[in-house]
Amino acid sequence: MKHPASPQAHQPRSLWRTRFGVGWLVLGAVAAFFLLTEHRAHLFGALPFLLILACPLMHLFMHRGHGAHGHHGSPEQPRTGADETDQTNPGDRS
Image (cartoon, rainbow, N blue to C red; front, side):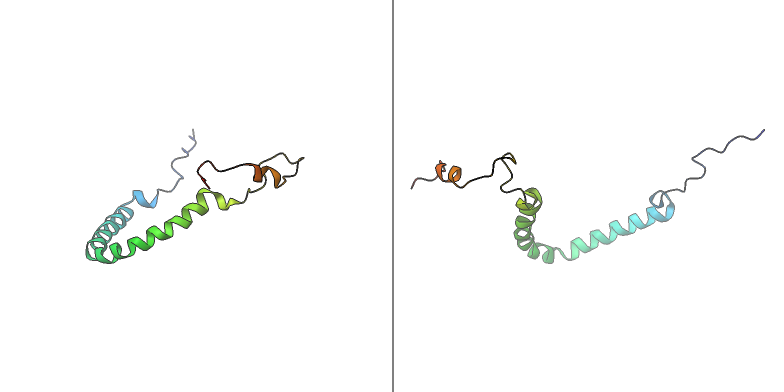
C-alpha cells in the first residue's frame, strides 16, 4: 500500500533556517557592529541632514501628496471660493 507523501516533504527549507543562512546572519551582525563602531562620527555627522530629509518625506507619505484637495464636498455641488473667505482662522489675530 502506497501512502501519499506529506506536503511538507516537498517544500524546500528557507535559506535562513540552514547553517549557511545562520552563518550569513552572524557575519552580517559582526560586520554591522564594526561598521557602526568605527564609523560612528560619520553617522552622527549625517544625522542632521537625515532629520531634515525626514520632514518632506513624512509630509509626502503621511499626507499622501495632498492629492485630494478640493474633493471634500459632494460631487454634485462644485466648490466656490465664497465659503473659504467667510471662515477665519482662530489663531489669526489681525
